Length: 346
Ligand code: ADP
Image (tube, rainbow, N blue to C red; front, side, top):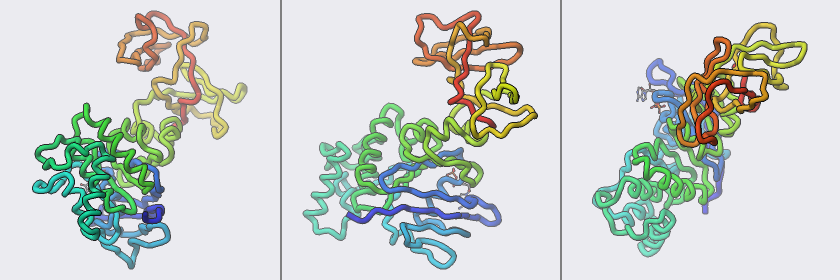
């Protein structure tokens, strides 16, 4: 097995003409971890993936594999010499080859019996042994994408880069294919990049998450950190809806006061006299009849395990999410308690 190293983008930029598509990106892909790169269409995610792979040349900065420079101002190791596996959204299998032959394709350096044995081993790992002799047109999209990922992993690449690999799949199949594929990748212990525009996919599956907007990585960290402590509104909304409240710092009590309740000021809070915006997640409220913060329910809709509550208090409106753990949704006047863990200063 090849030694595992980080795959690193160090201050990497990429220009098309005068337009900066990737702007000073720093991202380290760690062995055995799934790093997700999340952002809207056109943010520069695929371009950063291409910079890692060697399909694109940086206009400045460096790409490294461990201590080895793959690209910088002077060096450009071509994609085919980097031994980095790439998986795109379209399954791109060879149509005239069976599942086994597709996986064995990248193993030309091995004697035939070993190639076939390794291909059979990969088919088992992706739970497709029964489809060994099927041609791509005889397989479902999910089966094809599993074979594509096995084909990329079989030659023991130093890293795997995936560009929206699951977004072409039927939602009913997607979870299963994704779980099988990501487990196979993690078992190899190589660095893996998952480019996606799907926040739920990124939060559920990433060990490390980077958010990209207009060519820049705005924030990176664990999914939990980014969800609960986003640095700005764009990063916050990339991971889900937020409620914005006008807030004041009460220097006497040390609390942050909002129309929907108060929270202790966090340790990192820089005291200010000016009003500011407190962001919070819709699930940041607990219903508590004894709370001094009483609000009116304007509408309530059960949406599976969560109920969407539109509430009003003294002219402030908000849409909350509360657990659907009662037979009828809350109505009338309710008491609200704000959970500071899901609040952040914007
Ligand atoms: P994402 O993957 O986040 O959707 P991309 O990296 O594909 O974003 O593209 C980022 C921006 O770069 C887009 O505005 C796109 O139009 C532009 N772009 C991508 N490839 C090229 C190219 N070869 N020439 C010029 N512009 C490009």
